[in-house]
Picture 1 (cartoon, rainbow, N blue to C red):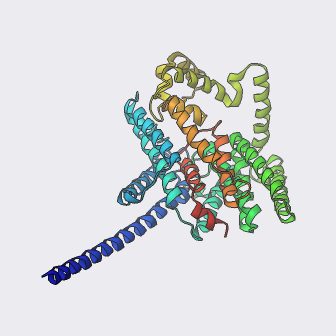
Picture 2 (cartoon, helix red, strand yellow; picture 1 turned 30 degrees about the vertical axis):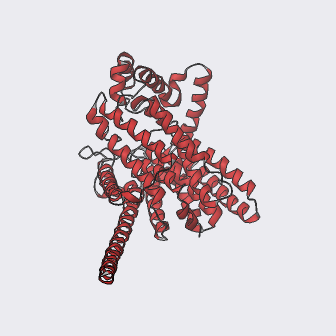
Picture 3 (cartoon, helix red, strand yellow; picture 1 turned 60 degrees about the vertical axis):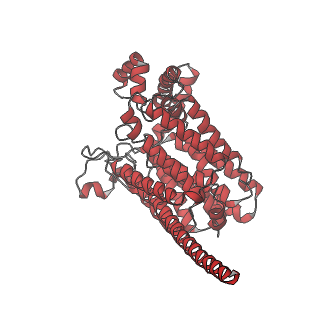
Length: 463
């Protein structure tokens, strides 16, 4: 009798083990499929969204509409994949800090002065709760699921080349697409595929130092060419904040070169430096054939005027005329700070600064609007923007999140992959003090934050 029972038990165990092994195989297959889908969605966010363009000043379709549609679809895909593989998810201290930021963003949206704008974002900005959530998902998926693929070099080369070349051609008024399709555009306005030259400068602030690092370490001519193209694009964007970001990233690069000095690295640094000087001189004092044949470029001396503006800003600050400095940015910062003082806890809701200023500092906001004929909808400082719209606690948590990532990287000058990713992140963080976030660029920044902690990706990155 015992033998019969034992044989039955053994058969049941075999059946159960077969079932368990089948379940495991199915689970592994689902996980692999989810990983592939996550990688594809991230590639679309990083390499395709920056290229999606609705030409500037075409009023029928907002220039960011294509970007936001694709971003939200990709975000939904990432979220579904994470739900499917939820048992495999893990959260370290940095991730938990981000969860706190997400909760504060959600609360700010719920109690917003304009809930619909807080959810979707201001008109043609689209940086509401939904977009911010996609940024967070992009970061998390890049950190834990993004894997290295040799095709990434091709995708990056295509994206950077197209955006840089379009911006350069726009600046010199020789971009044929506008003429072929009879699309209205602004000559010399080097906005590339971002709709605004400041946004284009944002993107180049990440790209230039990243490819400088790649060339210095990997010594590939493709990276050197991309360095030159993106630097040229950054210059003609006339975005001074991106220049400051690059300057700070360059200082970090100099420290890296000193710590890892050898003649090969020195030669590569000299190649970059000489190329940058030549491009700078070409943009600053263009040859006669440029000025004669491209007369439609009314701002051919834009670089001179932007450099002069820096001088004027310094003079304004020294003469206690701060409100006029930084193209009026400081006056915007002052208004924003006054709004923060009124609603410091949860702000007024993501991307609702326009409403916040009109409600919280009504008279001064209207006065500035009449004086400048512009409406302030961004603080021109990402940190003040967070404090004003999501709240001071959210800004503190965001800064804690960033500091945790940066100061946990003890290997910036010893690990090549860390250095390459780090300089692009630092450049963005510096320019963010004077510029605004946009859906065409911000996801790239959040993606890099995730990659900086993805040790498996970094291990394959410099092969």
